[in-house]
Length: 58
Image 1 (cartoon, helix red, strand yellow):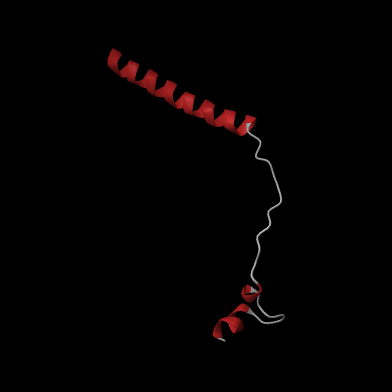
Image 2: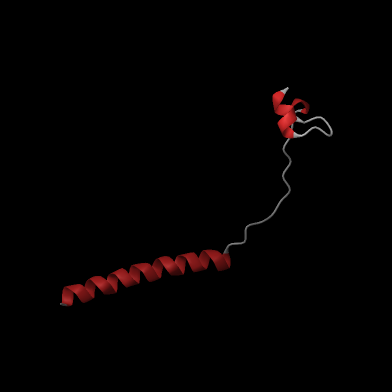
């Protein structure tokens, strides 16, 4: 029976360590926001007023 308790203790300690690491990441890491610019070639733009389904059949 001591082997079972040892297994459960170390398994619980491992899970608690993983949980603590995830909690630390949530509380301490701040993902910064920044603007993103993606150039779109004019050929990829749909014509004004046309639906994507109509544009795909052309």
